[in-house]
Image (cartoon, rainbow, N blue to C red):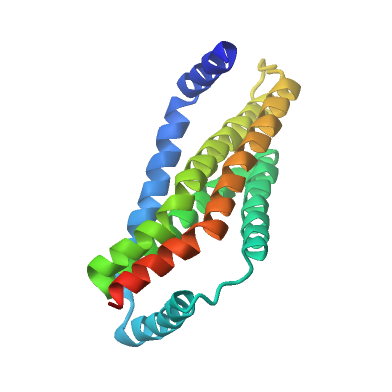
Length: 212
């Protein structure tokens, strides 16, 4: 545990500038997503709210998809996302795509929360608090950490290939990169578990409170 802690601290210090950049980029995506909500016209907002309201009606009635099925769908979706970032990290041309994916992830969260609050005010905030926030407590760190490690590894490959006199041990860096990706799957499993087994009941409780 002591060695693991030392390694984590060393990793954060070594990649502090990349962590700062990816965190700011993600937050910019969240802000942009919230701004996009205000750019929608009335008809677009009404159409989205119609489908959202129908979904909430199903949740309030307890018409859930099977918890196990929901867990599997969420887990597969998030693992594909992590796997895609991992693949992009080992290819030089994948570096900008990783940044775009991270920005889009933030944008989706910002749009979802912004739309709920825009349409339902305090009730929308409560719903976003129980339906969006819990699983993203695990997902956001996982995506930021993996994106940072992916960028760091990609930069090492670029230096190895194009900078003369640089001979970094890529094999050991690749092993650490792959092991880090495996560790991030634990965060994804926790997020998918919460989304499947807890979020529907929290949402139903909030909707019952709202409809009283």
